[in-house]
Amino acid sequence: MCRVMPAERVYAAWEGDRAVGGLGAFPLRLTVPGGRVPAAGVTVAGVLPTHRRRGVLRAMMRALLDACHQQGEPVAYLWATEDTIYGRFGFGLASFTAEIDLPRERSAFHAPFPAFGRVDLVSSVSAEEHLAPLYERVAAATPGMFARSSVWWQTRILADPEWRRGSGGDLQCAVLESGGRPAAYALYRMNWAFERGLQTGSVAVVEALGASPAATAAIWRYLLDIDWMARVKAGLLPLDHPLLLLLAEPRRLGFSLRDGVWVRLLDIEAALTARSYQAQGSVVIAVTDEFCPWNGGCWRVGPDGVERTDDAPELSCDISALGSVYLGGFTWGQLQRALRVQELSPGATAQADAIFEP
Ligand SMILES: CC(C)(COP(=O)(O)OP(=O)(O)OC[C@H]1O[C@@H](n2cnc3c(N)ncnc32)[C@H](O)[C@@H]1OP(=O)(O)O)[C@@H](O)C(=O)NCCC(=O)NCCS
Image (cartoon, rainbow, N blue to C red; front, side, top):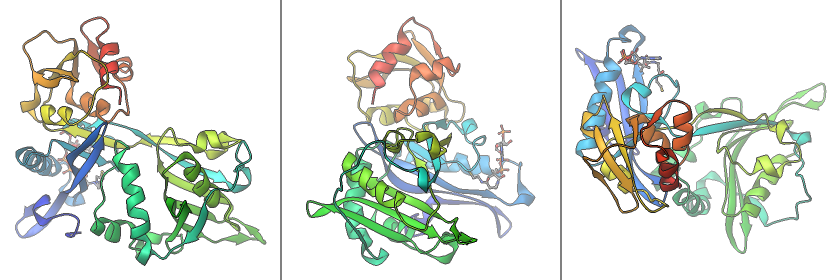
């Protein structure tokens, strides 16, 4: 872990000489609309069952977010195991994510799909050189994804220890080449199973990315066509995943939603300046932030800059709402309809959405 998370980014709560809780942050570069921003990838939150509900997590979160702020990391973000914990610390739900569980015999595309590229299986030892440049192209253009170092590839993605396999087999890596270079790849595991001679196993897709629509469709066609598998399962998919419109029977995907990325702005000016905006003009937002009170006040936001202002606010919200709109996963209109934003000046919500359009 210390190869991807420096020791100084790990927090522990001690009782005598015994650690009773821990929290940490990966130093990452998160893609936002129009750029990248240094971000703390908050992780390994845990407190011993014997020491829960005494404020241990709160104290560790205090130390971690204060340190991020002091060292100029304007954003923290995480994937939550439980969705009820992090709102109180100012994290806002910034995206939904989807899982699929598709019977393979119902996986036909809606239209004939001409062969595209050529797929090869590569060993995980040599996979990084094929996968990393392609991932970087997609990640740099996709808000919510982050830049991976070589150490991250080796320890977090391509390492294949027994405990990661669950009921699946070895990590497989398929690379689709087109025009002499990788255009898509898939990391997946196969879970072989038969009952009375009939296949019941599944392909578990760990990650499948393409550099173009045709390459993405082709790598998914490859995954959907693996013989002896009854189902194809995948998670962490974006809500606009192309499979929804590629398939003849999208309802067979069993496309189910859950909360995805949670984002916490630690320095409003630096965080909002790091992303791009579309429309001309600006909007004045009154922000309350109980856990990081230095963010509180009125902010004018627009393509010409982000600054504190004494002007009358047009929208009012908690800091978690800014986290929700930051990556473009939710709109101000959606937040207003869910009573998470108050419109103080008629038309301000629509104006904010025009400005924040990713
Ligand atoms: C979740 C966990 C880290 C919380 O640690 P903790 O020290 O008990 O939390 P705290 O006492 O500091 O509580 C902080 C706040 O979170 C709330 N909270 C704590 N655990 C919660 C849970 N599981 N669900 C909802 N709220 C929770 C507390 O009620 C408290 O709220 P308040 O400040 O509004 O009063 C701990 O229970 C744990 O290790 N759980 C198992 C592992 C886990 O779920 N990790 C989180 C992965 S996302």
